[in-house]
Image 1: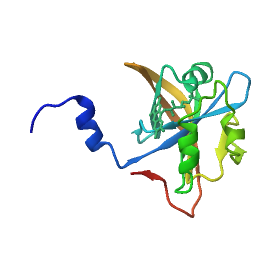
Image 2: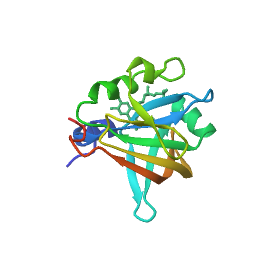
Image 3: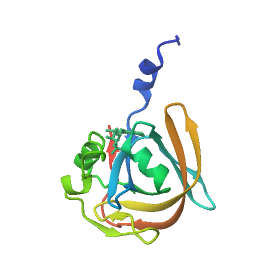
Length: 156
Ligand SMILES: Cc1cc2nc3c(=O)[nH]c(=O)nc-3n(C[C@H](O)[C@H](O)[C@H](O)COP(=O)(O)O)c2cc1C
């Protein structure tokens, strides 16, 4: 064992990892997508998920204005969408239109439920905490959606 720079140690351990998408609502009522590696389940009863969103992300603005998100667990054929949503910003791009994302309306606030996904959890933000240059939003799951066939995407 020896001490090294943080990124040297972290790069050796953070893959394979699961990746999720979070759907948020823009100020004009349309919707945005962000790719997230930093998310986790945080409560059994009620079920809750935390997502960590950078202060510079457009999604951060969306969450500050509308404290709801749909946490999307992508199916194994959604890698391209995850890369696109993780490399463009909703500030100047409609990621739903760009990627021809198919969805139905959710039950909580109408945020899109991606029909290609393995599972989608509709969440209401109940707690948030600043974590350095990110904000951790803790969302309580209000509705859960599942597509029974197919597997979940893993990033190697
Ligand atoms: C694989 C992958 C994982 C990512 N994980 C996170 C994350 O956990 N938190 C975050 O704030 N940004 C993360 N990003 C970066 C955002 O997805 C990216 O900056 C995105 O363009 C922000 O979109 P927005 O400006 O529309 O919110 C990730 C990107 C990729 C490709």
